[in-house]
Length: 308
Image 1 (cartoon, rainbow, N blue to C red):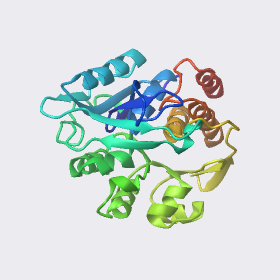
Image 2: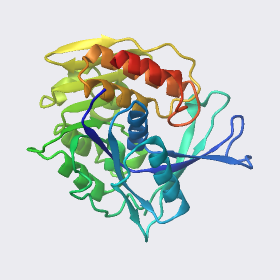
Image 3: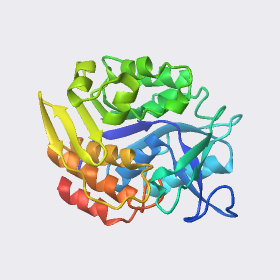
Image 4: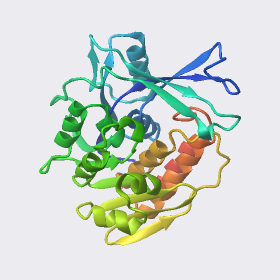
């Protein structure tokens, strides 16, 4: 399998979670993991055998060390993961809801974090990069991150760009989400978006309505939960049924879908096979707890078989 070097640029986080059956109010122990939409995608891509680099910033603290160690252990190039000495690594806590975690809530402690402030994206960070993946979560972190995403998607660039909308209303208290996210999306080559979030942020209630909002974008993937996903490419829609699964926790499903879809497309596969790969990995993640699921899961072998 061959693919270009992929740069995932975003906010890395540490996540602390009560054990199954417990919550943040009563738990005496928490599990520690790494997370963040773009970091999730990078880890999945590495597990699928692609050449991937992560760009972001962490503090000079144990949480930052943990994120870097996770990248190295999974085979993600960490040269673009910068350490900012005067700011902490961002963290969040996950509050489980009942036996099934699909209703889990999250509590972020990211204000003033290393990723939210200024940090460099250097020529070395971008060396050999042929594809960049970003998301709307990063855009919500700070004005500096918006400028960084716009720089990565500037016309005339030498790499392609994918953008996962990842609209999180709570991160946009000033009401600027619709304009900022639309401006960034229109500059990208591949846009991945949930129909529910497109409806919420732009009032676009159908795939065709989304396509009309993004006439400059050549490839648009529209996800719709348990309903078929659709992709607009080469002037036509292709649809694909999701994989049936018992949901344990929905957190991370979109990142898994994006990673497997991009892995397939960037290695030369068609939209149908790519969506199938996305569904397989998303089903794996939502059938377990944790933002990325198990690294040794059969799903990765299944996707490699799909990719050939």
